[in-house]
Amino acid sequence: MATKSTATSAGSSRGSKRPLKAPAKAAAPSKKAAPSTKIFSGLPKELLLQMHDLMVKSRVLEERLIKIYRAGESYFWIGGPGEEAWGVPLGLLGKKGQGLQHDWWHLHYRCTPTLIALGMEMIDSIRLMMNKVTDPSTGGRNFSNHYCFPQWNVAPVTSPIEVQYPIACGTAHAQKRVKGGGISIVSGGDAGTAEGDFASCLIWSSRQGQELPVLITVQNNRWGISTSYHGQHGESQIADRAKAFGIRSIVVNGNDPVESYLKIQEQMDYIRKTGKPAFIESMVSRLYGHSSASGANRVEGEVDALMDFEKKLLKSGVLKEAAAKEIWAKYEAEGIAAAEQARGEGVPTAESVWDNVYVGSENADWRKF
Ligand SMILES: Cc1ncc(C[n+]2csc(CCOP(=O)(O)OP(=O)(O)O)c2C)c(N)n1
Ligand SMILES: [Mg+2]
Image (tube, rainbow, N blue to C red; front, top):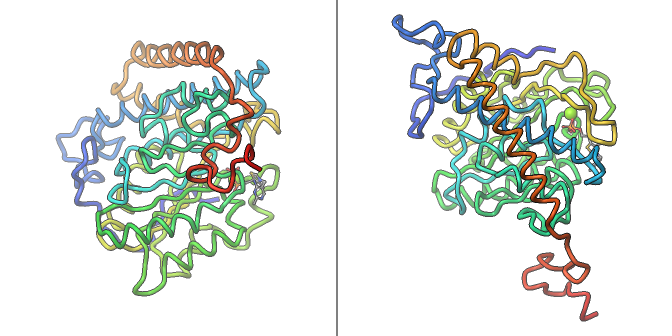
């Protein structure tokens, strides 16, 4: 399967006002650029190190979650180790905040790297995983990686796959009305694109004259639990389906954080400028299988984007060996301390089961039935 980047329509990568973004001519570094800059398409060293740091944090967190599951301190694990090189740039490039002027996130259960890039603390992921009442996403009532952060417009991750796609059209519609520059970003897996909800998103986002500012993404890890991609798809790339709707569509190597960053930036700039949708199919790895239901064991032969990136950073001198070790050790210690703290926290009470189901528990307070 092709993993190269294939733009299917032209766009602009200009207009960046955010810190730590690529320079306007990122793909064409000057002759004076250091060798390291050339390898990384001209991305600033600070950004490369920031992405590496967040990728390590996300990986260490996910591996801690698996350890918590194995220790019998949680019922179930599902998550995103292997998607760091895609998810971290995505989180960094979003317009973070609350309200329609900011970006809305409609994510699925492999988006820890994006949440880490948005600023989620390790302990809040661990609290969710351990079903602690202190979990800010669900009060300890959902399973791992089903995040919800209203202060950053992160909509609740749902267990039914794919329903997030048409919901993203809803927030994009509201954003278009207020004209505040916010866009809606939706993610999901390759197998889920068989659901009608995915097709609804393509239709509702692309109606001529009523196009919506939505970044539609699919993380293609070539598996739907134990069903292989190859037996399920007539098209060669899922991105090709978006083309039929006139949606600007590309495939990126989601195992390369530099390519991911530059291509996401390009697509986001296009959406913000035109108010129209764009599509990215990101080719990623699934490093620990589907979930704890399939063992959560490390899978041989999958590309490890984080280790590949770290090797490149070390070889080019952007990162020093001692500094790399320190980053891993720092997050390892943070994960252990966070698990220790969460272990001592309480679990939700039976009385609170209907809290936050409806506003003011309207029609849903079982104590009054
Ligand atoms: C509507 C619905 N159907 C089936 C399931 C069971 N299920 C959970 S994850 C999954 C596989 C999804 O595969 P994919 O969309 O490729 O995402 P991945 O897990 O590979 O990231 C399935 C079928 C579900 N949660 N919801
Ligand atoms: Mg998949």
